Length: 184
Image (cartoon, rainbow, N blue to C red):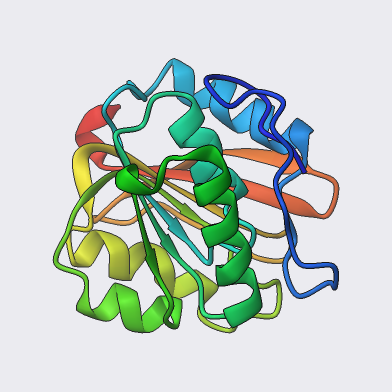
């Protein structure tokens, strides 16, 4: 897995060898960040990489100018690789690594972010609850975006709290963008 653009372009990132995490492919990262480029100013953005896994999405955001990224990862091995990658890149001062269950973090979080990536395990039972919780707790700044990676069997609808869409499909995977209604 590598960083595809920005300050750390081409740097190879370490990740766990088993299938406990699904690092975002270069194609997925490129597409998502291209879509974000017309929607969100990455320079000086605060980012949350929830269910961080290898940390690839958050590190890509740092490489593209994000001011700070908070990584949340429950798996001890994956968290150690994130820490090693941040040390290798020399960007620890622009990051926080929280080793906890993502839902516990969401329930107690008092911060708000410009961009939130959520890439839960495919079998995670609470994926459909994430937008309601994140928007309900105002974890996302008014101009921000939440991106959730999920399987094709999950469909999100807009609510009074948020607008769901656009969606981008990558084989069996979909990434849905969420934002506040007034951004339309």
